[in-house]
Image 1 (cartoon, rainbow, N blue to C red):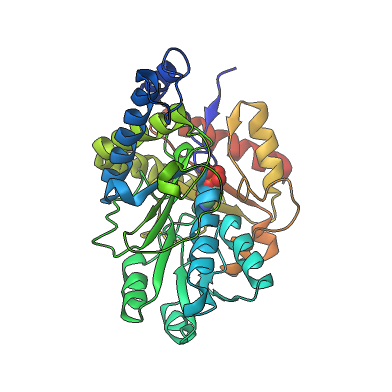
Image 2 (cartoon, helix red, strand yellow):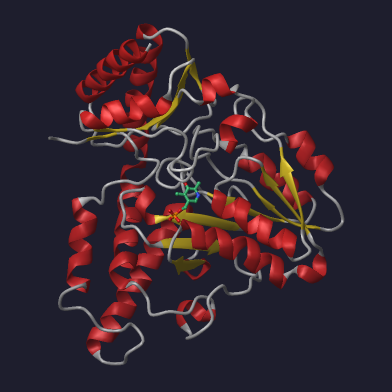
Length: 378
Ligand SMILES: *Cc1c(COP(=O)(O)O)cnc(C)c1O
Protein backbone atom coordinates (compact mmCIF):
# COMPACT_ATOMS: atom_id res chain seq x y z
CA UNK A 1 0.00 0.00 0.00
CA UNK A 2 1.27 3.44 -0.93
CA UNK A 3 1.58 5.79 2.00
CA UNK A 4 0.01 9.22 1.72
CA UNK A 5 1.92 11.30 4.24
CA UNK A 6 0.29 14.45 5.64
CA UNK A 7 2.15 14.79 8.95
CA UNK A 8 5.07 16.98 7.97
CA UNK A 9 4.93 18.99 11.18
CA UNK A 10 5.85 15.78 13.05
CA UNK A 11 8.72 14.96 10.72
CA UNK A 12 9.59 15.03 7.02
CA UNK A 13 11.08 12.56 4.58
CA UNK A 14 14.81 13.07 3.93
CA UNK A 15 15.34 14.40 0.40
CA UNK A 16 17.35 12.21 -2.00
CA UNK A 17 19.94 14.98 -2.49
CA UNK A 18 20.38 15.16 1.30
CA UNK A 19 20.81 11.41 1.70
CA UNK A 20 23.31 11.26 -1.18
CA UNK A 21 25.52 13.88 0.49
CA UNK A 22 25.43 11.96 3.75
CA UNK A 23 26.29 8.46 2.49
CA UNK A 24 30.07 8.95 1.89
CA UNK A 25 30.45 9.98 5.54
CA UNK A 26 29.16 6.56 6.63
CA UNK A 27 31.36 4.72 4.11
CA UNK A 28 34.88 5.90 3.26
CA UNK A 29 34.91 9.32 4.95
CA UNK A 30 34.54 7.91 8.47
CA UNK A 31 37.36 9.82 10.18
CA UNK A 32 37.00 11.74 13.42
CA UNK A 33 36.82 15.46 12.71
CA UNK A 34 39.34 16.09 15.52
CA UNK A 35 42.01 13.85 13.94
CA UNK A 36 44.94 15.36 12.05
CA UNK A 37 45.19 12.96 9.06
CA UNK A 38 43.33 13.62 5.87
CA UNK A 39 40.08 11.67 6.45
CA UNK A 40 39.80 13.53 9.75
CA UNK A 41 40.49 16.92 8.21
CA UNK A 42 37.97 16.19 5.43
CA UNK A 43 35.33 15.78 8.10
CA UNK A 44 36.31 19.02 9.80
CA UNK A 45 35.99 20.76 6.46
CA UNK A 46 32.59 19.20 5.78
CA UNK A 47 31.32 20.38 9.17
CA UNK A 48 32.44 23.94 8.48
CA UNK A 49 30.79 23.93 5.05
CA UNK A 50 27.53 22.74 6.60
CA UNK A 51 27.82 25.44 9.28
CA UNK A 52 28.12 28.04 6.56
CA UNK A 53 25.00 26.76 4.78
CA UNK A 54 22.93 26.75 7.97
CA UNK A 55 24.16 30.27 8.77
CA UNK A 56 23.23 31.50 5.29
CA UNK A 57 19.70 30.17 5.58
CA UNK A 58 18.97 32.45 8.55
CA UNK A 59 21.34 35.33 7.79
CA UNK A 60 23.80 34.51 10.60
CA UNK A 61 27.60 34.23 10.70
CA UNK A 62 28.99 30.66 10.62
CA UNK A 63 30.62 31.13 14.03
CA UNK A 64 27.19 31.90 15.51
CA UNK A 65 25.91 28.38 14.68
CA UNK A 66 26.33 25.50 17.18
CA UNK A 67 25.32 21.98 16.14
CA UNK A 68 23.24 20.03 18.67
CA UNK A 69 21.46 16.67 18.71
CA UNK A 70 17.97 18.09 18.13
CA UNK A 71 15.59 21.00 18.30
CA UNK A 72 14.90 19.91 21.86
CA UNK A 73 18.58 20.18 22.83
CA UNK A 74 18.79 23.60 21.17
CA UNK A 75 15.79 24.79 23.20
CA UNK A 76 17.23 23.38 26.45
CA UNK A 77 20.63 24.96 25.79
CA UNK A 78 19.14 28.34 24.90
CA UNK A 79 16.96 28.59 27.99
CA UNK A 80 19.05 26.92 30.68
CA UNK A 81 22.39 27.89 29.16
CA UNK A 82 21.39 31.55 28.99
CA UNK A 83 19.71 31.54 32.40
CA UNK A 84 22.72 29.98 34.17
CA UNK A 85 25.26 32.26 32.50
CA UNK A 86 23.25 35.43 33.18
CA UNK A 87 21.79 34.70 36.59
CA UNK A 88 23.50 37.71 38.14
CA UNK A 89 21.50 40.04 35.89
CA UNK A 90 18.15 38.67 37.02
CA UNK A 91 15.98 35.60 37.50
CA UNK A 92 12.88 36.30 35.41
CA UNK A 93 12.04 34.74 32.04
CA UNK A 94 8.99 35.36 29.83
CA UNK A 95 7.58 32.71 27.50
CA UNK A 96 4.11 31.72 26.24
CA UNK A 97 1.54 29.09 27.16
CA UNK A 98 1.67 27.45 23.72
CA UNK A 99 5.39 26.63 23.47
CA UNK A 100 6.73 23.19 22.61
CA UNK A 101 7.37 20.90 25.62
CA UNK A 102 11.14 21.37 25.11
CA UNK A 103 10.61 25.00 26.19
CA UNK A 104 7.86 24.49 28.78
CA UNK A 105 9.67 21.64 30.56
CA UNK A 106 12.97 23.58 30.55
CA UNK A 107 11.07 26.42 32.20
CA UNK A 108 9.70 24.05 34.84
CA UNK A 109 13.24 22.92 35.65
CA UNK A 110 14.37 26.54 35.91
CA UNK A 111 11.45 27.31 38.25
CA UNK A 112 12.67 24.57 40.61
CA UNK A 113 16.07 26.30 40.59
CA UNK A 114 14.74 29.68 41.66
CA UNK A 115 13.91 31.33 38.35
CA UNK A 116 10.53 32.99 37.94
CA UNK A 117 8.69 32.32 34.66
CA UNK A 118 5.78 34.25 33.15
CA UNK A 119 3.68 32.24 30.68
CA UNK A 120 1.92 34.70 28.37
CA UNK A 121 -1.65 34.12 27.22
CA UNK A 122 -2.55 33.94 23.55
CA UNK A 123 -5.71 35.10 21.76
CA UNK A 124 -8.13 32.76 20.00
CA UNK A 125 -5.82 32.57 16.96
CA UNK A 126 -2.79 31.72 19.11
CA UNK A 127 -1.13 35.16 18.96
CA UNK A 128 0.77 36.24 22.06
CA UNK A 129 -0.58 39.29 23.82
CA UNK A 130 2.01 42.08 23.29
CA UNK A 131 0.36 44.32 25.87
CA UNK A 132 0.69 41.57 28.46
CA UNK A 133 4.29 41.06 27.36
CA UNK A 134 5.13 44.75 27.98
CA UNK A 135 3.43 44.64 31.39
CA UNK A 136 5.25 41.46 32.43
CA UNK A 137 8.73 42.94 32.04
CA UNK A 138 10.52 43.74 35.32
CA UNK A 139 14.06 44.78 36.26
CA UNK A 140 14.72 41.08 36.84
CA UNK A 141 13.74 39.99 33.30
CA UNK A 142 16.72 38.54 31.41
CA UNK A 143 15.15 36.51 28.60
CA UNK A 144 12.06 36.36 26.39
CA UNK A 145 11.48 33.08 24.54
CA UNK A 146 8.57 32.97 22.08
CA UNK A 147 8.22 30.42 19.28
CA UNK A 148 8.40 31.66 15.70
CA UNK A 149 5.51 29.44 14.62
CA UNK A 150 3.37 26.99 16.54
CA UNK A 151 3.72 23.29 15.76
CA UNK A 152 0.04 22.43 16.28
CA UNK A 153 -2.01 25.31 14.88
CA UNK A 154 0.64 26.89 12.63
CA UNK A 155 0.22 30.43 13.96
CA UNK A 156 3.18 32.68 13.13
CA UNK A 157 3.96 34.96 16.08
CA UNK A 158 4.79 38.67 15.70
CA UNK A 159 8.49 37.99 16.14
CA UNK A 160 9.77 41.37 14.99
CA UNK A 161 7.49 43.26 17.37
CA UNK A 162 8.52 40.99 20.24
CA UNK A 163 12.23 41.45 19.50
CA UNK A 164 11.73 45.23 19.38
CA UNK A 165 10.20 45.14 22.85
CA UNK A 166 13.04 42.91 24.07
CA UNK A 167 15.71 45.23 22.62
CA UNK A 168 14.08 48.38 24.05
CA UNK A 169 14.31 46.77 27.49
CA UNK A 170 17.78 45.28 27.08
CA UNK A 171 16.48 41.71 27.30
CA UNK A 172 17.74 38.78 25.21
CA UNK A 173 15.27 37.21 22.77
CA UNK A 174 15.20 33.50 21.87
CA UNK A 175 12.81 31.95 19.38
CA UNK A 176 12.06 28.26 18.85
CA UNK A 177 11.96 28.31 15.04
CA UNK A 178 11.88 24.57 14.48
CA UNK A 179 8.61 24.81 12.52
CA UNK A 180 9.47 28.04 10.73
CA UNK A 181 12.92 27.34 9.31
CA UNK A 182 12.57 26.31 5.67
CA UNK A 183 8.95 27.52 5.62
CA UNK A 184 9.28 31.23 6.37
CA UNK A 185 11.93 33.76 5.38
CA UNK A 186 14.13 34.41 8.41
CA UNK A 187 16.90 36.96 8.87
CA UNK A 188 18.24 37.00 12.43
CA UNK A 189 19.86 40.43 12.02
CA UNK A 190 16.92 42.16 10.42
CA UNK A 191 14.58 40.54 12.95
CA UNK A 192 16.96 41.24 15.86
CA UNK A 193 16.91 37.65 17.10
CA UNK A 194 19.57 36.77 19.73
CA UNK A 195 19.09 33.00 19.82
CA UNK A 196 17.21 30.63 17.50
CA UNK A 197 16.57 26.86 17.56
CA UNK A 198 16.19 24.71 14.45
CA UNK A 199 15.98 21.00 13.70
CA UNK A 200 16.99 19.04 10.59
CA UNK A 201 14.12 16.56 10.40
CA UNK A 202 11.45 19.26 10.16
CA UNK A 203 12.74 20.47 6.79
CA UNK A 204 13.73 17.34 4.83
CA UNK A 205 16.98 16.72 6.71
CA UNK A 206 17.88 13.82 9.01
CA UNK A 207 16.60 13.22 12.53
CA UNK A 208 18.83 13.70 15.57
CA UNK A 209 20.54 16.85 14.37
CA UNK A 210 19.74 20.44 15.25
CA UNK A 211 21.42 23.78 15.56
CA UNK A 212 21.34 26.71 17.91
CA UNK A 213 22.13 30.18 16.64
CA UNK A 214 23.60 32.43 19.33
CA UNK A 215 24.43 35.99 18.42
CA UNK A 216 28.07 36.90 18.94
CA UNK A 217 28.65 38.46 22.35
CA UNK A 218 25.84 36.55 24.07
CA UNK A 219 27.02 34.29 26.85
CA UNK A 220 25.56 30.86 27.52
CA UNK A 221 26.67 27.88 29.57
CA UNK A 222 27.29 24.70 27.61
CA UNK A 223 24.84 21.86 28.05
CA UNK A 224 27.23 18.93 27.52
CA UNK A 225 30.67 18.90 29.17
CA UNK A 226 33.62 17.07 27.68
CA UNK A 227 35.86 17.68 24.66
CA UNK A 228 36.42 20.91 22.82
CA UNK A 229 33.98 20.44 19.95
CA UNK A 230 31.77 23.33 18.80
CA UNK A 231 34.25 25.88 20.13
CA UNK A 232 33.99 24.43 23.63
CA UNK A 233 30.23 24.89 23.73
CA UNK A 234 29.00 21.38 22.97
CA UNK A 235 31.15 18.32 23.68
CA UNK A 236 30.83 15.02 21.83
CA UNK A 237 32.30 13.67 18.59
CA UNK A 238 30.39 15.38 15.83
CA UNK A 239 27.63 13.49 14.03
CA UNK A 240 29.22 14.33 10.69
CA UNK A 241 26.78 12.53 8.33
CA UNK A 242 23.83 14.27 10.02
CA UNK A 243 25.60 17.64 10.08
CA UNK A 244 26.33 17.31 6.36
CA UNK A 245 22.68 16.36 5.79
CA UNK A 246 21.47 19.37 7.76
CA UNK A 247 23.77 21.60 5.71
CA UNK A 248 22.40 20.22 2.44
CA UNK A 249 18.80 20.57 3.66
CA UNK A 250 19.55 24.21 4.56
CA UNK A 251 21.07 24.88 1.14
CA UNK A 252 18.03 23.39 -0.64
CA UNK A 253 15.62 25.25 1.62
CA UNK A 254 17.28 28.56 0.77
CA UNK A 255 17.29 27.85 -2.97
CA UNK A 256 13.63 26.78 -3.11
CA UNK A 257 12.07 28.93 -0.39
CA UNK A 258 9.65 31.06 -2.44
CA UNK A 259 8.47 28.20 -4.65
CA UNK A 260 8.16 25.94 -1.63
CA UNK A 261 6.02 28.45 0.25
CA UNK A 262 3.78 29.04 -2.77
CA UNK A 263 3.30 25.33 -3.43
CA UNK A 264 2.46 24.51 0.20
CA UNK A 265 0.08 27.46 0.52
CA UNK A 266 -1.80 26.28 -2.55
CA UNK A 267 -2.19 22.74 -1.19
CA UNK A 268 -3.17 24.02 2.24
CA UNK A 269 -5.75 26.49 0.93
CA UNK A 270 -7.23 23.88 -1.37
CA UNK A 271 -7.56 21.38 1.49
CA UNK A 272 -9.15 23.90 3.87
CA UNK A 273 -11.58 25.03 1.16
CA UNK A 274 -12.57 21.47 0.30
CA UNK A 275 -13.15 20.58 3.95
CA UNK A 276 -15.16 23.72 4.66
CA UNK A 277 -17.30 23.22 1.53
CA UNK A 278 -17.94 19.51 2.01
CA UNK A 279 -18.23 18.89 5.73
CA UNK A 280 -20.65 20.35 8.27
CA UNK A 281 -19.67 21.77 11.73
CA UNK A 282 -15.98 22.35 11.10
CA UNK A 283 -13.67 25.00 12.48
CA UNK A 284 -10.20 26.05 11.32
CA UNK A 285 -7.91 26.61 14.30
CA UNK A 286 -5.21 29.28 14.24
CA UNK A 287 -4.94 32.29 11.98
CA UNK A 288 -6.01 32.35 8.34
CA UNK A 289 -3.38 34.93 7.39
CA UNK A 290 -0.45 34.48 9.78
CA UNK A 291 -0.08 30.78 9.31
CA UNK A 292 2.65 28.35 8.29
CA UNK A 293 2.28 27.61 4.57
CA UNK A 294 1.88 23.84 5.03
CA UNK A 295 -0.23 23.74 8.20
CA UNK A 296 -3.93 23.06 8.63
CA UNK A 297 -5.57 22.27 11.95
CA UNK A 298 -9.27 21.53 11.86
CA UNK A 299 -11.89 20.54 14.42
CA UNK A 300 -15.04 18.55 13.76
CA UNK A 301 -17.60 19.07 16.52
CA UNK A 302 -18.61 15.96 18.43
CA UNK A 303 -16.34 13.63 16.44
CA UNK A 304 -13.44 11.63 17.92
CA UNK A 305 -10.23 12.77 16.20
CA UNK A 306 -8.58 9.45 17.03
CA UNK A 307 -11.35 7.60 15.16
CA UNK A 308 -10.46 9.65 12.07
CA UNK A 309 -6.73 9.00 12.55
CA UNK A 310 -7.12 5.22 12.85
CA UNK A 311 -9.65 5.02 10.02
CA UNK A 312 -7.32 6.93 7.67
CA UNK A 313 -4.38 4.80 8.78
CA UNK A 314 -6.16 1.74 7.41
CA UNK A 315 -6.08 3.45 4.02
CA UNK A 316 -2.38 4.30 4.34
CA UNK A 317 -3.03 7.98 5.11
CA UNK A 318 -0.95 9.60 7.87
CA UNK A 319 -2.33 12.61 9.74
CA UNK A 320 -2.17 13.57 13.39
CA UNK A 321 -4.58 14.61 16.13
CA UNK A 322 -3.11 17.26 18.49
CA UNK A 323 0.68 17.19 18.23
CA UNK A 324 2.86 14.11 17.87
CA UNK A 325 4.48 15.02 21.18
CA UNK A 326 1.20 14.84 23.07
CA UNK A 327 -0.40 11.94 21.27
CA UNK A 328 -0.06 8.82 23.34
CA UNK A 329 -1.16 10.86 26.33
CA UNK A 330 -4.86 11.42 26.86
CA UNK A 331 -4.40 15.00 28.02
CA UNK A 332 -6.10 17.54 25.79
CA UNK A 333 -3.66 19.70 23.83
CA UNK A 334 -2.35 22.66 25.89
CA UNK A 335 -2.33 24.73 22.70
CA UNK A 336 -5.98 24.11 21.84
CA UNK A 337 -6.91 24.79 25.49
CA UNK A 338 -4.99 28.06 25.40
CA UNK A 339 -6.88 29.34 22.34
CA UNK A 340 -10.11 28.73 24.27
CA UNK A 341 -11.43 25.74 22.34
CA UNK A 342 -14.13 23.68 24.14
CA UNK A 343 -13.43 19.98 24.80
CA UNK A 344 -16.20 19.10 22.35
CA UNK A 345 -14.13 20.66 19.56
CA UNK A 346 -10.70 19.70 20.96
CA UNK A 347 -11.50 15.98 20.86
CA UNK A 348 -12.42 16.25 17.21
CA UNK A 349 -9.25 18.00 16.08
CA UNK A 350 -6.92 16.80 13.35
CA UNK A 351 -3.67 18.34 12.09
CA UNK A 352 -2.88 17.91 8.40
CA UNK A 353 0.52 19.26 7.32
CA UNK A 354 1.80 19.22 3.76
CA UNK A 355 5.08 18.72 1.90
CA UNK A 356 6.25 19.25 -1.65
CA UNK A 357 5.50 15.59 -2.39
CA UNK A 358 1.73 16.01 -1.90
CA UNK A 359 -0.58 16.67 -4.86
CA UNK A 360 -4.14 17.94 -5.30
CA UNK A 361 -5.21 14.42 -6.27
CA UNK A 362 -3.86 13.17 -2.94
CA UNK A 363 -5.89 15.85 -1.19
CA UNK A 364 -9.06 14.88 -3.06
CA UNK A 365 -8.61 11.32 -1.82
CA UNK A 366 -7.89 12.58 1.72
CA UNK A 367 -11.02 14.78 1.82
CA UNK A 368 -13.17 11.97 0.43
CA UNK A 369 -11.77 9.60 3.07
CA UNK A 370 -12.35 12.07 5.92
CA UNK A 371 -15.91 12.63 4.74
CA UNK A 372 -16.63 8.88 4.60
CA UNK A 373 -15.16 8.42 8.05
CA UNK A 374 -17.23 11.21 9.59
CA UNK A 375 -20.44 9.87 8.06
CA UNK A 376 -19.57 6.45 9.45
CA UNK A 377 -18.87 7.52 13.04
CA UNK A 378 -21.80 9.95 13.27
C1 LIG B 1 9.72 19.28 16.59
C2 LIG B 1 9.81 20.49 17.43
C3 LIG B 1 10.79 20.61 18.44
C4 LIG B 1 11.71 19.47 18.80
O1 LIG B 1 12.63 19.20 17.80
P1 LIG B 1 13.35 17.74 17.82
O2 LIG B 1 14.45 17.87 16.84
O3 LIG B 1 12.30 16.76 17.41
O4 LIG B 1 13.83 17.52 19.21
C5 LIG B 1 10.85 21.78 19.15
N1 LIG B 1 10.02 22.80 18.89
C6 LIG B 1 9.07 22.74 17.92
C7 LIG B 1 8.20 23.91 17.68
C8 LIG B 1 8.94 21.58 17.17
O5 LIG B 1 8.01 21.52 16.23
